[in-house]
Amino acid sequence: MNLVWRSPYRCGESSWCVQVAHVPDGRVAVRDSKDAEGSALLFTPGEWSAFLAGVRDGEFDLP
Image (cartoon, rainbow, N blue to C red):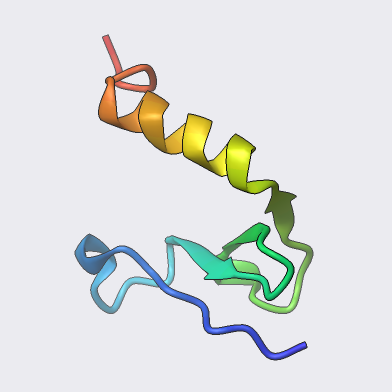
């Protein structure tokens, strides 16, 4: 399956990024750009929405 992988705009030319792709069945795939041929994590739309809400709410910010 050929997915369109996207990296954050802040990533620039760095290869140390997390990449995200939308899977045709509605899930979201996440992979490490340093290991593009490796495994990807798959999230349901609900899981992905909850993760994004946590990011927006600062749940993952360092103290």
